[in-house]
Every structure is written in structure tokens, then in C-alpha cells.
Image (cartoon, rainbow, N blue to C red; front, side):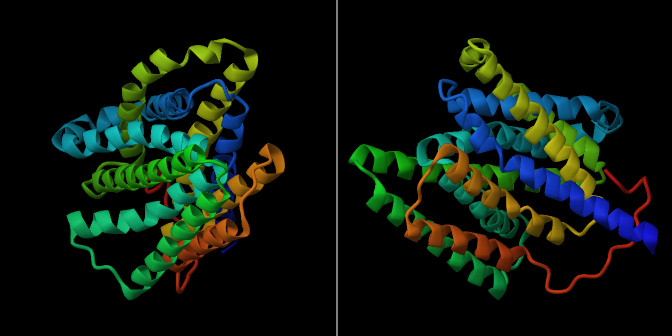
Length: 312
């Protein structure tokens, strides 16, 4: 029992670490304002994805035949991985760190359920519908709050475009999660499925990084931001999250990651000096509550200790 409890604690710690470092990405990107959102996203997910593929190279090599067989899932996931950071960081640059993070993370579970219904025939429960309504209400409040708070029409339009990009980020996040899970359900090890998916996405992002990444070389500050984004949130963060998923239920892991938008919002206010009207904070609270409603487990039993072969 002690060993099992230790595994559980390690799993929770891994997901907590991932959530904390993911929550720093928007604030870190703000320290390189002359680097475009496309360059930030390409460096973070592109280089981070290639690093993930590199450490999973042996597993990918053993699964080459299966990956070729299900190439459509792999390509779709890789394209989603490539689009996700461009939309996510673009959303934060236009609408602010708080709104960009909350809309992207808040919309992902809702869109994920719709993808599962469309492609897998999954049924949407009353609990999901209730949570979705709460989340949509929160996003509407965010839009209304920012629209009334905007100092000009141009600012308001930028915020709305940022929210739209956040929704695109949530869709692509949900899509590559679904395709990677689909590969795993077809017998491909998690390390190979994730490594191959992120590797394809990383390769697709390299031309974007080459075309837009010049400002990273303009100063040590910009270079430090790029290195941090690729190695800590995207590389170490996803490794820690995978370690957590091997030890605790996915429903609990998803619930713990609700810490990410909270961390992002707090850092944006304290460090960057962002200001969000009270109505906007109510929208943020509703979106986070929506995620709790959808993902929080009704019942939880301590998981059995998995063998090393079952882990990622």
C-alpha cells in the first residue's frame, strides 16, 4: 500500500508540475514582445516536439509498421500540433494572456467531446451539456467584458480575433489528443504515438521558425525565452504529464490541469499588469467551473500499481 501511495503522489506531482509550467507560457512570451506569436509558437512546440520525438525514437522505430498503417491519424494529429501553438500564442498576443489561455483551455474539453461524438459515436451526457452551457456563458461574458473595456474599435476587434484564435487552439488541442489516443487504442505504445505525433508537428513548424525566428537571434533575452519555452513547458511539461497519466486516472489528471489557466491569469495580473473587468473574471470563473463539472470524477478509487511495461 505504501508503494502504491508513493506512485499516486508521484503521479499527482507530475501533473501539478506540468500545469504550473504550462501556465507560465503566456507570461514568458510577453518578455519577448518583438518576437511574433508565430515564432514563439514554432519555437515552443516545434523544438519541443522534435525533442519529444528524439527521446521516443526507439519506440517509434518499433512501431513504424503500425504508424504507416494508421498514417491518416498520424498526419491529422501532426497538422493539429503544428496549428495549435500558432493559434494559442496568437490568441494570447491579441486578447491577452488571461483570455487567450482560458478560452483555449476552456474550449478544448467541450470540442473534444464533440469530436468523439462525431467520429466515435460517443453520447453526450446531461452533465456534459450542463457544463457546456456554463462554459459558453463564461466565454460570452469574456467577450462582453472585453468589448466594453476596449478603448477603441480596433482593440475590440483584436480581442474578438484573439478569442476566435483561442477557439481554434482549443479545437486543434482536442484533435491531436483524439488522434494520439486513437493510435494508442490501435495498439501503438503511448511513447511512440505521442513522440511521432509531436515529431510530425515539430517538422511542420520548422519552416515557420526559419521564416519568423530571426528576432530570437537579435538578443540574449529573446533567445532565452525561446529556449525556455521549448525545453521547460513543452518538453519537460509533457514528459511530466505523461508520467502522471501512467499513475493516476485521466479524469483526475485533467482536473488537476485546471490549475494552468489560474496560474496564467495570476501571473498576467501580477507580472504583466493585465487588467480584466469584474464581468470578465466572472466569465473566467464560469469557464473553470465548466471544466470542473465536465472532468471532475464523481467517484475515485486509488488506482492499482501499473507495471513498467504499462507505463508510457
